[in-house]
Image (tube, rainbow, N blue to C red; front, side):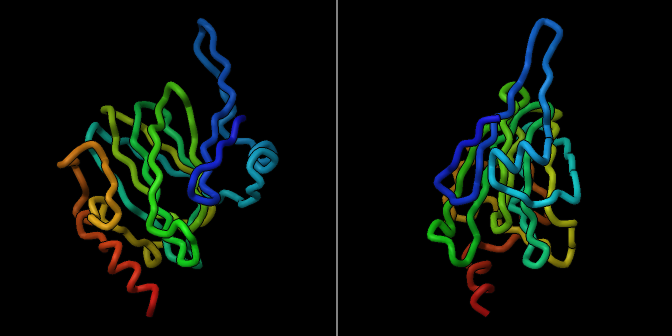
Length: 183
């Protein structure tokens, strides 16, 4: 397993060892001890989620408020996504900055997203299967969404009109979210 840091503290790109030959491939998708040794992250995962999306479906930018904030280990099982995270930690020097990375079923790269980040992705292929391990249970009352196309965030998704759920279209602006933290 190779671990690469990013400009956003705590956000890690993880490249697992993939053993491929003429028969196909094998990789270890989760090993608590190896993950902790390689990343220094000792958070326990309590929930696994999987979604299937068609090309141009955009999901996000989702997060949960404390005390239900979730860390996520994300990966693509089939297809490809443009994965995007936004640092929303109040005391972070990179607050409001985003990081994006293509995740796909060829490279098998994973992304560790610590609590305190909003997360979303754009499916780049039909029938893209996205998987993520979470460090906290889903809590509907703690769930929040920041609009994917918020001008203050300036995220270039590479598409002007993705297919976005009604709930995600009604997300908070980044400015409104930030103002809510001051109260």
